Image: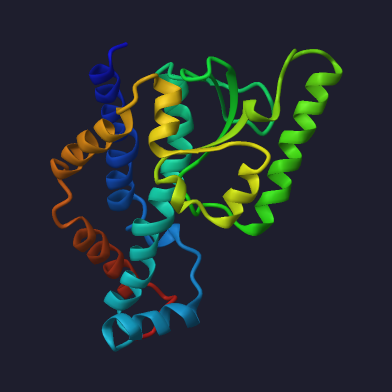
Length: 237
């Protein structure tokens, strides 16, 4: 597949399965009170922070904003990206436990087993040793049963979708001492074969985002949620 066509397919995938899904969920799911587990003390405080008062509108914002602008889109992004690589036949789903995808590296021509991560600061210190152990155990098993002849540490990688090598957290740098952490432009080059694929993809995604209809998304969702809160027996204003 030529570069421009592949970029367009990825942009269309983002548009349909990430952006549109998020907009629909924001208006049809996250605007419903039943979708939240509520800490009454925290929402009262956050309402005060947001509105300088304890109001249905303040509670709605305290619930709706972090869900829509944080957890909802991040969860959707992480889940869909793995599926995208497989569905668009850029990579294969991995049969090895703990690995997300498998692909032939277009630079060194070796097969790679890859765990995908979103950005350069998306793991914590407690994630480092379990991830390294998972890679090490898999490699040792493969060498024992000769299933993967000639396999090396550099064939098991962490693929980070966006960012620069200099932006990698210390946790990623610790992993990189044993297993390569491939990030941003380099990762997309290795998986697609096109040196400037990452930059082209970012440009086209920005055009797609600019064309999305998100007018009054936040206001509509908050207003509907505030109306439910106003009628709910969970709150007294």
